[in-house]
Amino acid sequence: MNNKLKGQFVIALVCFLLGLMLVAQFRSTQKSGSALTSLQRIQELTTELKTVMDEREKLKEELAEMRKRLEEYENSAADVSRVTEAMKRELEKARIAAGLLEGTGPGIVITLNDSNLPRQPGEDPNLFLVHDEDILKVVNELFAAGAEAVSVNGQRIIATSEIRCVGPTIMVNSVRLAPPFVIQAIGNPDNLESSLKMRGGIIESLQVFGIQVSIKKQDKINMPAYTGAIKFEYFEPVKAGE
Image 1 (cartoon, rainbow, N blue to C red):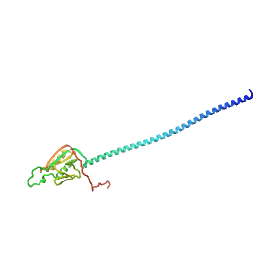
Image 2: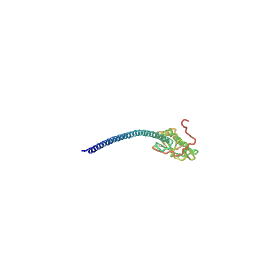
Image 3: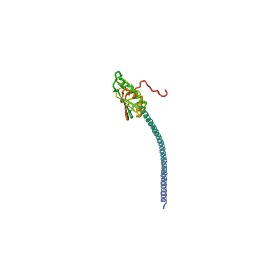
Image 4: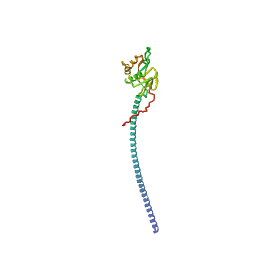
């Protein structure tokens, strides 16, 4: 082999070796870049995971706060409901006491009618008639005996009810009434009847002049509500602390 061929062979060998070295270097660079990329991705995922976990903890805290507020609202609503129910019961009691509600219960029914006895010459005919004071005495006696509600000819008796004569009729709650007068009372029937029939009582005094009196016990009496107007022009309640 001459010198020229030897030189070409050496050059070719050197080029081949350089090629191998370049390929090896390229592969090494690829592996290093791939490893670097994987490390960066891991760091990014770690950061994202931490962010998600922080947000999750924040949401848990917000959820706990919302549950606490909801529990407070529920407790507050329950308290308001209890107060409302108590107020409703007290209001109902006040309306019952004021005679503004219809009701039912045991009691007695008293019927008063003018006397049918013959008049003697010179006798005052008014003595044989039912007067406002007679009805008023019966009503007062019933309340004193524990009556919880009283009506006269369908007119509920309340604190401001008037019972007075107007000509030949009797006025109750600004309504003219004529005999017979039917007085209903809810309460203990035995106590109510005994209070009216006691010796020297209102019924005995009425019967002296022949006033017709009927008393009946009943297991159930339907009591009407007061339907008239209630107006206070001068009265004002005193506020607490005044």
